[in-house]
Amino acid sequence: MNWLYRFTTNPNFPDPIQEIDAFITLDDSGEKTYLLLANRNGPPLSGALPGDIIGLCTGDQEYLYLHGTAVVVGNCVNQNTPLSVVCVYGNLEHRTFCPLGELNRCPSNILPEPILNFHDQRKFLSGQAFVKKLTLNKRPLQNSKINHKKNQTPKNPLIIQPTSIFPKVTLKSKSTSFIVVGLDPTAGTWESKMKNGPKQMPSFTLEWDGNKFMAPADPIKLHYSNECFWNLVNEKSAKMVCIDGPNKTNGPNLESDHNTLRWNPLGGDGIRAGELALSRAGVNLFWTTQNTVMKFDGASRWIARSLVLFSEMPKQLKIETHPHGVFTFLWRMFGHTDPLPKKSKPLGRQARLGILKSFIPNLTEDLVLNHDAVDAACAALVAGLHLLELTKSFGSEDKGGCIIMPNIDRLAEVIN
Image (tube, rainbow, N blue to C red; front, side, top):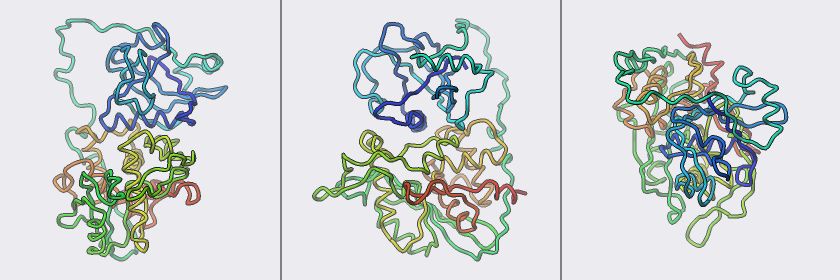
């Protein structure tokens, strides 16, 4: 690690960890991310080199807390706010920004002393600076004729055998057979009151035969409308539906505006307890806050559609999950200590397929052709695990609703 960047409270992000999660989620979505540097000539971090690693931190009076890492992917630039982070910083002129990539979340813990001893942490926290340099930068050799990548062997066996490192999970349960459906919702339109959207949303049907999970023939269906999705749920006689999206808020609220919906601009500032708990456990996500729904257009329409879906079909059992969190916990359960590879990369896709296949033995790659379909399959698996009483709840109904995750302690007991 070459640098530390300390995030602090600001009007848009009263909890600075929300800002860190927003950056990581933007990066996961393929957006370019930048850190805003101090408003002066040659601000700290402006001399960072591509490849430098930055620790993303917060702090109290005694300790720094590490929440994630990022890699510098280019030279710092002086310009107006890059479009991709206007939602974070607003429109600023002639400021210095540091371009980032490879952002990863880790469980929120005190910064280890080998990185920076506690005395120096307290000294840093007592000042006004929010950037600290840890090591001397050395520029890489130019025009090197050595191909360092040649003949290198893959560091991760997933590249060769995507499912072999995940053992088959045998679930002992007396539950009778049932069918569940998982849904990865997409952003809806305000004109349709979030009942339709321009992008199809995938659902995944999963069967429990009394002994194991099985994917039926053609488990993926695509839906432009909520009605189309609920017709499938009724057709399958699904016992439970699991949706990758918020079921409640703890502040923001939707209101009708003539023939459309909109977010109330005076919504509350509450934070969902479940999202806060997941974030502290090292799972990045867009927090469902007033700041998010007012400034992040895509996220605001996706959140709104999810809330509408949960309000429909009141007699249908519905739960919420967060696939990235599910895969993160299961990745750790299977013994991995490195960050879960990003879903947008081949290695990340193979990791997720391997995890799913450990629970759904007949799942094949051609059944889930993109990461949205993988997330829908993950949601279906959570619904099934929930009915088998193998899940854990994050949050509470009175503080923004519950988010359901696998109970990895109980699941670890049934791994072959």
